[in-house]
Length: 127
Image (tube, rainbow, N blue to C red):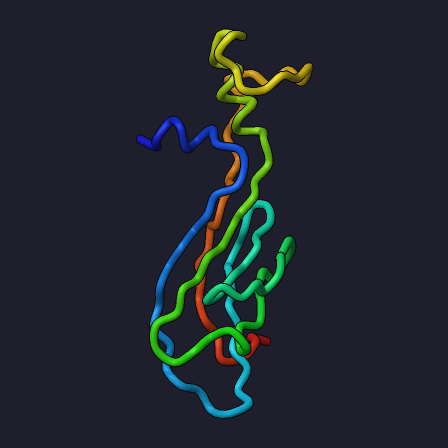
């Protein structure tokens, strides 16, 4: 059963991961492919801001930031608020976190959100 606090989350979630990279040939570009994201992601690798991705192909070049050995990846993902509205519709008005005139009922399905992946490092962009 999914965690109730997470399934109705709306805002920014931060994903952190360390990974090991091997040396690559000089001039060989590397890319981080995020797979699929709902809704946008800001990417940092080893403290270097690599920008924001908000649409397909959900990919950033990491050549200038990656180093042989251990690397620290941080991805901030911002999602929309439909799931929060569904969660709030199940609460008494005093406990709700949102104020809206949108009639989202608890019978509404939850939408996919977050870093859905798969996340992978690519040595060249796929065709």
